[in-house]
Each structure stands twice: as C-alpha cells, then as structure tokens.
Image 1: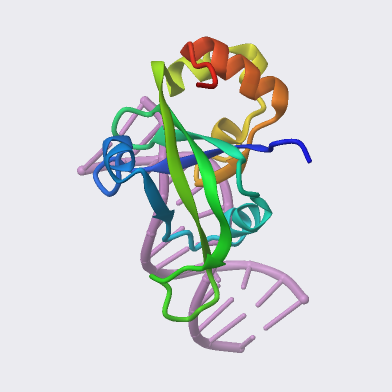
Image 2: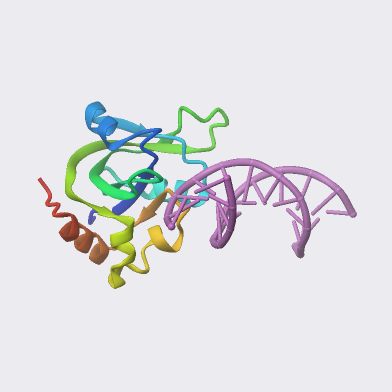
Amino acid sequence: MAVSHWLVKSEPDAFSWQQQVENKVEPWTGVRNAQAAKFLRTMAVGDLAFFYHSNIGKEIVGVVEVARAAYPDPTDESGRWVCVDMRAVSPVPQPVTLATIKATPELAEIGLIRQSRLSVMPIAPEHWKLLCKMGGWRKP
DNA sequence: GCCAACGTTGGC
DNA sequence: GCCAACGTTGGC
C-alpha cells in the first residue's frame, strides 16, 4: 500500500520539533477531537507527516514518520482516545510558513487553511510534493 | 487581547 | 432533536 501523507500540529510551548528530534520516537498524545482521532486511526507505520508549529512560528519545520499505529492514549483516563508514535525523520531546510501557504493558490484547499483548528489532517500527494519542494525537503 | 470557527453541553 | 450558551483552538 502506498504511503499516506499527513500534517500534525503542535504548539512549540507544549512540544516542539526540537524535543521531537531529541526524543527520536515520541507518543503523539492528547488528541481529543473526533475527526483528528479518525485520522490517527487511519495512519499506518511508515506514513510521513509534516510537523507544524502552531501559535509560535506557524510553519512546517520538520518531517516525522509513524513508528507505531494507533493504540490507546495513555494520557486519556477514559480509554476512548488513541495516539500513535512518531519518529523524527529530518528537518525541513527552509520552513514553510502559514503566510507562504496562504499565498500559494495551489494550496488554498488544504486542511490547514480550510479547517484551521484541526490538529491532524491528511495531505494530498500533489500538495505533499509541492510543500516538499517549497521547503527544500527530500527523503533522506 | 481580540475574534472567528467550531465542538460540546445542557435545557427544553 | 433543536439550539443557545459556553469553552477551546489558533490566527492576527
């Protein structure tokens, strides 16, 4: 099966790309939104995701890959929510800012803009390709 | 600090 | 089941 592509958001105050790199593999916990959780459940090991800094920076700063598929979120006492494990792949050499994305007509339809509050979202292959090009990111 | 978007809760 | 009130997220 083909690799799927995603974008995940994190507030760098809470959990930054720097921490992701230092920890290498990190559980992606705390998603408490049904739509975002549905996407987490859809992720497969090996899928790639952009790591986006919300609030501070507002830019795509790195790429992570799914290291473990959805399992119960240990930070959720109710047991209803899931998380995945993410592994740092490599930084995006030239971070792609929200302003740049907004200024790019081809990217007008991506979830980041259409649904600004969603923290986990799929990225279409053509958008992934374009964003990689804009950020100067190549698969290592 | 404000506000828009949108999800959740609770009264009816 | 509807909808107003309220809370949260995230951009500006």
